[in-house]
Length: 183
Image (cartoon, rainbow, N blue to C red; front, side, top):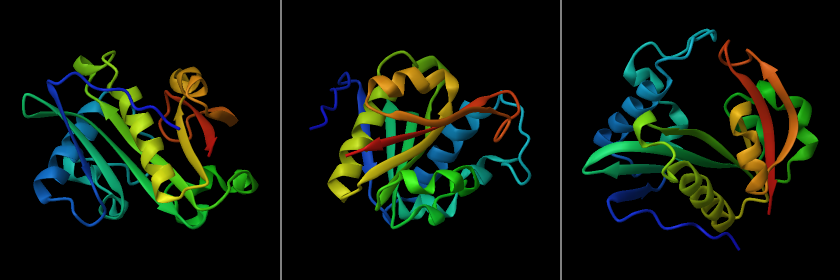
């Protein structure tokens, strides 16, 4: 059983089910993503150039987390359940690892915490809360890619490294690692 830690009462957490996200919530999520990644050199074609470009079609079909502090959004994350990995965005990075996933597979994407709210347990809360939700949805495994600076933290939560780190596959200055969690 996954034990999701409590957040301090100053934080408000919304878990938004698929097809229920409002335009106001989507705007807040897009702004959080843009603010959190604004310092990173972009190398992918068609990478977001404006705040609204940080939204993806999968955002409507996913469970979304929106964490606020004093009514200001400060963190967000997404989990999507897939019958196979071909429907996961960025599948090019996982094709060689296809045999490593039991289906249905949950993909964890777009976890961001504003810099001034990091080191307060929000990232761990969002990761464990998404694991709990993926299990509840019937996922057999979870896949994600993460910056190599997060790998050790995820191993401590029960994830295993499948490949990586690989430099520059998404953003030129970041090494990325492919990880899996099995239920």
